[in-house]
Length: 221
Image (cartoon, rainbow, N blue to C red; front, side, top):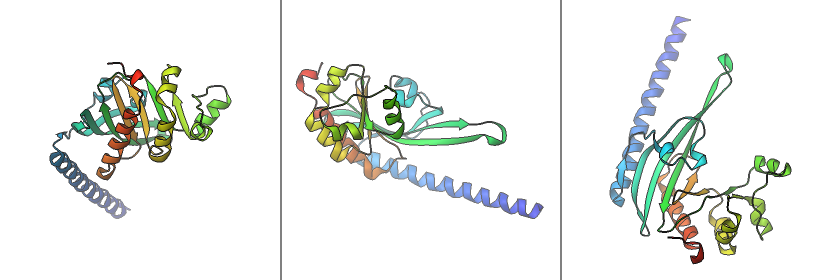
């Protein structure tokens, strides 16, 4: 029995070492990506990130919240911020206690006009259940879009002005795997997975295209 425990201990240590070196290599790949693009790179954990952007409700879930591997740069003349974001949720207690870790990639664009609060994301099962009890989102002229996307905003008129037919087409074609959150003068494009450098440009492109489709009369500077 002691021998079995020792073997288990060795396996755990080896896995930790392998994981450490794999993460070190990944961090270096992200750093080189930032250098090649001329972005400023901040590899450490920013535990104040959620507090800095406290109006984004999607960042206020769980505990142990932090951003890491942050890159600051520009895209189409707009300030851009990219990072990997983490939070955890603990369920149960005692022997039934379990902790789940959640990661996402955030790409944020700051246009030169004001953005009112607005959230656009794929509609899930729980959203449909809430709709059955009267807690519905905003429905649009396209029944297909309304079936597939959950849209909410405290200003429904502004939401209808922003999410017009061309915007719906864009989101149906390119936006299905992302969430879009507007707050605090920023558009956040959120993807629920750890940072994949091959996905950065597509996220920036769909975000900038979404902003470009906002009508001029909605752009308060």
